[in-house]
Image (cartoon, rainbow, N blue to C red; front, side, top):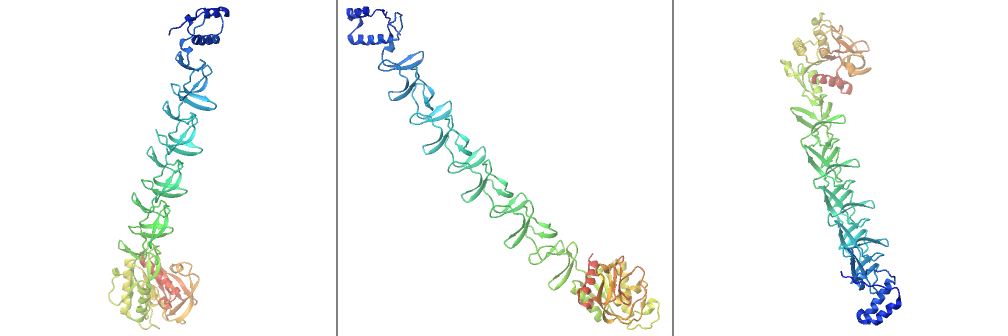
Length: 542
């Protein structure tokens, strides 16, 4: 740039003379006046100074790649200035500012040309927002129907942001606050209408969802406050029956996985601690139950693999053991719950004693039959020798002195049946004459006549050991019809019960499974009589 030099003389008088003498050299009065004003501002020193030509007029000026502005007084402007409709900021020396500017506690952004910006500003890959005054905004901003959040440095948030203890999600790149379902890195979150991230249970539409403490939508099995829930691949909580893997589970109306007993539509199910529905034989508490392939608990009579079981009535379902009464009949169920169709042979004729004895055992739930002809032990689980006439004293080495009503043919059949049972290891039970015959078969003897035992109820004492001690204790009352009794007890047997006069009323041989009573339990029709019958049946069932 061309520069003009002027020597300033120290004497004002000489200056005035020169201006008056050579008006043509310095121009018109107007121009001269302007130059004089400029000269006055520069001072009257003798020193020589360089004045840029552009600074002698109003407007934008530049020096050393910096810009400034001269007002109408040719003074550099400072502070905020509105020039041609735009705002600029000049420092104390008049230099135009660019970039970020802090003034009065607020921040402003000035473009490279110095113009103050408003609205959205992109600076170093970050978005900022300046209001109509140019002041940079922070905090929440509602713009164009969307919400944005500007951090303390003014930068627009994207992604996750904790604001006042609440998490929000701002769309990456765009920065608008999101609501509703948000997917981030294969995980779903839910933002309320206010943008706040939700946790805990959420009902959306008709479905329930569970959002963890991190806001992540749960899937699969989820435990909440000690209860288990199942949330499908879409996060929706399931209810009702659920098939997972090889197991069925049940989730109630609240989605809670059930355990223990479950009653649905008149059917009982059992779900273990893991919630899995059980099938087949299962122990619940101290009882066995059977659940079919659909998990339904079975009750009543059921046949499994050829064996019958009784699983209680009225939806009880518990497998029964021991003696039960069902349909007016008694049944014996083994400790394993199996009902065995026990077949017993009452060895006799069609006399009243044999028929009454068979009927009593049938009443107790046993298939008891009076056998009047040939006997084959293989067809039976045991035998009963009922009451009847007297034995021939010759069988135990005595002369007949008081014995009558002897039937040697029947006696031979009964003795043969006893021997077959012993050989087969099957149980034997004798009643009245029956216990006497058993004693004689194994070498014992009889009293041919005693008194006080014909058709009387009397008290008998029970031994502390022996087979009958498992049934009775102390003493019991029994009904007797006999005039003969055991005199010498056969080897291998013990006396389990005696009358007050010493008469043996019951014997046992546990090794051979042989038992007998002198009294008539089949005619007593009470619990005392029934106990020994049931006990014998249990032996036969083993």
